[in-house]
Image 1 (cartoon, rainbow, N blue to C red):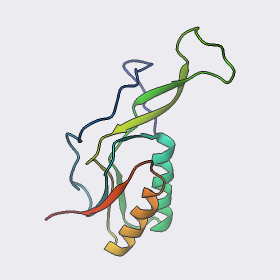
Image 2 (image 1 turned 90 degrees about the vertical axis):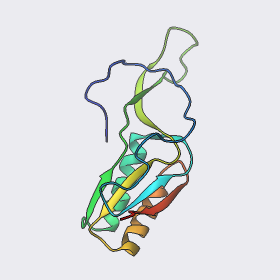
Image 3 (image 1 turned 60 degrees about the vertical axis):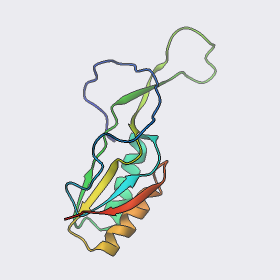
Length: 136
C-alpha cells in the first residue's frame, strides 16, 4: 500500500474537501482515465484495491498511472478507550480528492478493455467517477 516515507507533521487536522480540483483535471500520461465527480477522502487501501482490479483485468498488459498519493495521516483511538488523554495514534493515510481530479490513467490497450478495467477500479472507490479520453 502507498504510505509516505516522511511527513512534515505526524498528525493532521481533518479539514474539509470542498470545491473543484486545481490541477490534474485532464489525461496527461495515458490515453484513458477516470475522473472524480464528487469530493471525498480516498484511503491507501482503496487505491491499492482499484489498482489490483485494473491490473488483473488487463492481465498486466498496457501501462497504468496512479495520479493520487495518500499523504494525509488519519488517527484513531483503540476500542473502548475513555474520552480525553490526547489524540490517537496514526491509523492510516488518505488523499483528499476534489471533484474534477483524474485518479487513474491507462495506455497501451484498446478503449473497450480500458473502459471495463477502469469501471472495475471505480467500484473500489468511495465516490462517483466518469471515464475520460485524452483530447489530442
